[in-house]
Image (cartoon, rainbow, N blue to C red; front, side, top):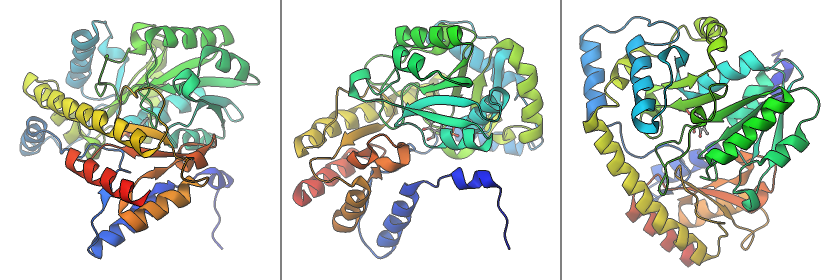
Length: 384
Ligand SMILES: Cc1ncc(COP(=O)(O)O)c(C=O)c1O
């Protein structure tokens, strides 16, 4: 008889995967599907990075790197913080990881003891609660809504800080809501974590993908905050599996030790390729893509509202719109399934992001062309 560790009962699959599988099945049968469920850029990695990757392979860059990453890449990232944000982040505090996913696991592993609580926004990125479960910790969802721009505020965090709390984990811009924390918000959250003796972890993976103001980095607030980032989203490198973590100096040794054991190192090929990610030629391509994402958001937001979806404010970043669909349904999962079957439009039901009113919400990702979005809206209009 198979035996599984008890913690596996807590680990949830992505519900959207079942929808995606069905969408692929329909496509294989000849149906046209508009994909608005996918959480990665539709653009392929820009050619300067691809070429750098090919060069690295030809040069025989196929061995392990140090566990904390290539020294040259850590320095490039340090330079990136100086150029883009005007702040000094020492290369020795930057750890290169196999995606933000590995960075989140490293941070939580050095902070969370069994039974510790980790506070996070609900709705929020689904993997976070599973990472905490793997450590036999307790993820605590803080219900957030339009009143606080779908981000936890200091008062909510303070009220929820009961029992052993290891950390508060927030994301700006957020997945699934696309909303930001201002520098003042981050400062206020940091003050609470400081006063309670816990840590603040800020996931900045969607930095670079903001359409009004640039996102504030938590690193400008304090060197005592853990910051997660990645080459996946802005840099368009999801499949290369490369991210990074900026940690308070005194944690680097322990994080290095853990990275050696868990991953040995991030992919070598990806690290060499990423050395070219900051070249002006590459940044110009990424900025053109950012403008394209903004045009998509600026089309989709009013179009969905016009159909009767509720979206508060203007989501400032990432590539998601989190929409209230209660005008049409009290079961967003069934609604998403019906939309797929009836119209060929694929979206993500709220249930993937937490337990705070998921049945009333769906996430639209604008990770497909403007023409596809227009066709999707056209189909929704006819159906609804
Ligand atoms: C908020 C957030 N954090 C982390 C990740 C993990 O990204 P990766 O491991 O590709 O860097 C994602 C991916 O969708 C995300 O949305």
